[in-house]
Amino acid sequence: MKHIEHDRLYTDLQYRYDYVASVIGFTKEDQELIRKSGSVVAGLVPTIVDAVYDKLHNYDITWKHFGQDQEGLNVQSDFNGDGKNVSMGSEVIKFRKTMLTKYLKKLVIAEWNLSFIKYLDWVGHIHTTTPLKMSTINVEYIHCNALLGYVSSVVIGALQKSTEWDDDTRDQIVDAYNKFFWLQNDFFSRYYVKDRVLTDGEKKAVTLEKELKENSLRRELRSESMLNAVVGIAAGLVIGSIGYKYLGSR
Image 1 (cartoon, helix red, strand yellow):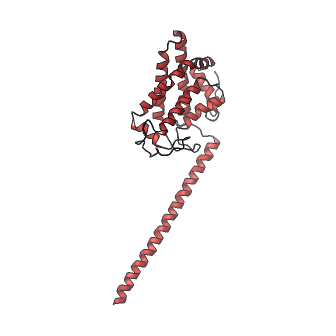
Image 2 (spheres, helix red, strand yellow):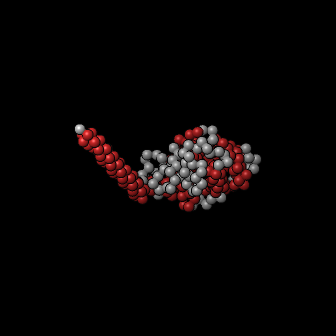
Image 3 (tube, helix red, strand yellow):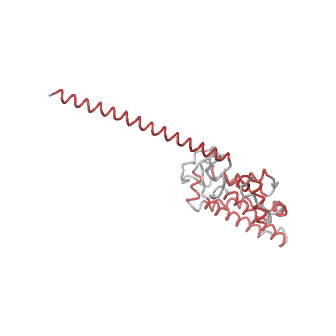
């Protein structure tokens, strides 16, 4: 029985990856099989990307997220909050399609080192609202999970139709991708599930964010109190003036 350190699963990214990969059975051989699929996957990428965004466009609850601020994109014209003015030709969709294209291409050429693991973790992280990221977009986990399942289905379905390899090799490649998408799903879930333990840096960031919100609220309350005081004084002066005019006339 191998001992697993509980806290390290939440504080050590490499350790977490190694544990989940070990349980799933994702090996160096699977990594090589994914690389081996590169020539076929590269040709499928445009079709996969279009299929993913056609799927997202089917539901207002998923499409609305493209009307929000997107990390890494400076174009603001499409950001009205609900995505109603975002079309397939909008800059935000072109940008997101480019990002998904890079992700799929990176997957088949990647060296499976800590740098790449951090990239997979970043893919999960950018979809959430946390004190450690710049944009305010927050895609609920239900949508991330559903979409990742769809991406997995599209990619695996395309690979199963390929005639590039013999049956045994194709089955092994499909199995490798299936394991990979479960690994990627863990890098999403770790930012959503309640059992995640915050690092010291994240705890400090959360504390700072709370302090900033509290200070902002105090300023708003002070401003409101001052406004009420000014309105009260003004009202008193007006009433006093009317009363003086009335009594003076008598």
